[in-house]
Amino acid sequence: MQIKQELEMTLKGFVGRHRNISEIFLKHANNYKNLIQSIDIDFNELSLEHRLLIGAYSTMEYSIESAALFNPSIIEDFDQSFLAEGEKRVIISFRATGEGHLSSIVFRKGILDEENNLRMVEPHKHIDLPVIIKKKTYDKKRFMKKMEEMHIPQTYSSPFMDSLPDKFEYDNLKKAIRDMLKSDNDAARKKALNEMTWLIDSYYDIEFNEDSKISGRAILPISPSESRGIEDARFVRFTDDDGSEKIYATYTAYDGFTILPKLLSTSDFINFRIMPMHGHGAQNKNFALFPRKINGKYAMLARIDGVNNYLFYSDRITLWNDPIKIQEPKYPWEFTQIGNCGSPIYTKHGWLVITHGVGAMRRYCIGASLLDFEDPTKEIGRLKEPLLSPLEEEREGYVPNVVYSCGSIIHNNHLILPYAVSDYASSYVTINMDDLLNALITAD
Image (tube, rainbow, N blue to C red; front, side, top):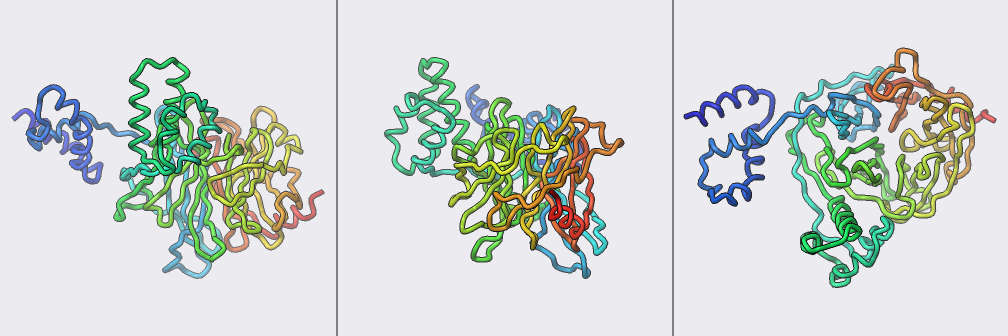
């Protein structure tokens, strides 16, 4: 009777706050099945009320946006139906930060009208958790190459990697690593084995329910490489040579010690594939994919040394080697570092790159550059002064004196630039494209 009363009280207090809360409780209870079996209790013999209450005691609410909602990126929605002339439906991603500075990716929908006013769709109040699907098969050669890039000594990996086939299974490697970790290993070997586990768990797919709203979907840290957060996703609507389109995003995975650049892809914002990026250039932050290939190759911007802007070309979208430095800090407001604020935007005069610059007192401002369409290593122009600087009322926040963006679009001949306000909130500005391009073309 006490179990039934406690369960009824819990459901009464929380059922209106969540979709399918009983399903959530049962899922969480199932996580304790082995533990319960280990104390000689048959989990399958437990009543439904018992399992629901066990799940309730192993569940907590977490507000993923309680600390900040910032670093936005905006793209055109695939669905442009039922709009008035001059309107555009958009999807905006944000870096949402909750307790413990743990960052996730969340989404909002909105409509830009003919005068560039942005009308946001009311967000869903609660988050639906996705189904997580681990990648099952791995290419041995690529996996070993990534271990080399991570400086994992072959001395530690060879004993079991040599015995694996060219295409090996996730479970096989995980079991081999677990078995070796049980033995008496020195600290260096344990560190290497843990890093291999960290790497293999960095590949996964997630699937949301089709009946969930996009604002109710969040990409949360899942793999060990993301344990301290998912940072600064730069979304881009990519058009391939055959005319097909796909959404990609680059983001930074952080585990408290190591930064891992990762790539996300989706065609519907329901199913997402997550992959780490490879190559000697796949390090540090600030990766931004061009929205189409250049001379038959994928192209990427990044700030791999923490100071300068680099360009990559690649035949594979996850492999990045041979970075080319294309921009260095030039003006006082960007003397500390220069990087991108999202994927380049195609214009008839060249690639428009919205940049960020860091100056004295670590003040972040937003600038703009124009790169040659066929050869983005050539800078056509760069603004001498910031396009956007923190206003006085925008200077206080989680990280003061910052304006920052992760992606813009063009609508009605205006740049629509969403931006973060001192790492706690977000806003947006519009800039006339004729004025901006003229200023870039005539810049010395």
